[in-house]
Structure formats: C-alpha cells, structure tokens
Length: 82
Image 1: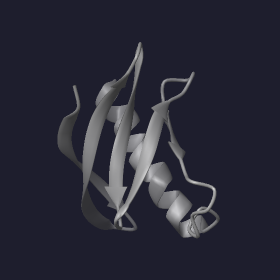
Image 2 (image 1 turned 120 degrees about the vertical axis):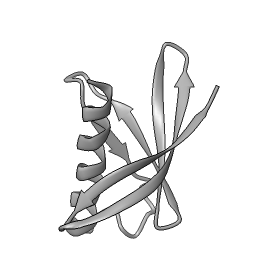
Image 3 (image 1 turned 30 degrees about the vertical axis):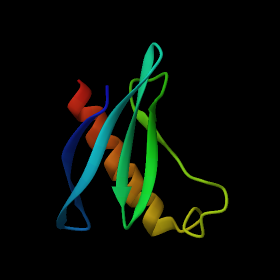
Image 4 (image 1 turned 90 degrees about the vertical axis):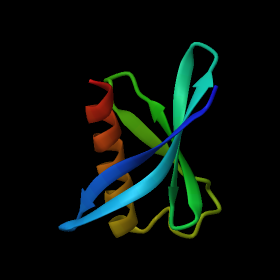
C-alpha cells in the first residue's frame, strides 16, 4: 500500500511543500519525494535518519546546494517518524 502526503520543508528561509509517497518494501519502507520533477527515494538508515538515493546519471547529484536541500528533506522525514 502506497500512501501519498505533502511534506513541508524550510530551506534557505523559504517554505516548500513536496509531494511524497510512503512505499512499503518487505519489512521496511521507502519514501519517494518529488522535487523539481525528479523523484528521489529516501531510505531509513541505521541511525534512525533517512538517506537520499540519487540516480548516478543525474546531473544534480554533485550540486552542493541541491544536496543541502535533500539533507533538509531527510531531516524533516526523520522528525516525522520520531
């Protein structure tokens, strides 16, 4: 069962709302988040946070400002699950 929701994130003093989808994966889950027409998958990590999975061919994967946005989304997701 996949559940959709909106995730509000404050990044660089602006508030954004991204479409997100909770996806069950066997005994765990993933959260797919749509950012700028690209879907990023966030997996739970061992420390109770989330890590973003970025496709290696993505041109934005090495862009530090965009990486900071993904980090802000991951922190928000970790806060929702606690």
